[in-house]
Length: 100
Image (cartoon, one colour):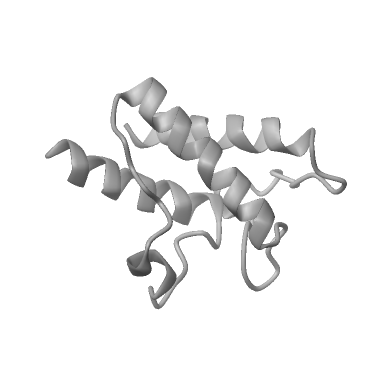
């Protein structure tokens, strides 16, 4: 399931890149910096990306998750820092909600 979530995140980035003046460079793969120190998106860009990812997870995996929460925002390490950390976080929430 993690691979599918990574694919969803990549597709969301590619869709959002069309709208952004400076597209996210995904050449680092899962180590691609998204948000925070050396991140490639600002808070508005992050919201847009997260909404896209949430929608695609629900559409393709049949699970409704909310990625932005107090838990995420207060985490010691931001789940939005890299593509990989976002995938891990989304996978955990997906499993939690689905009861897997």
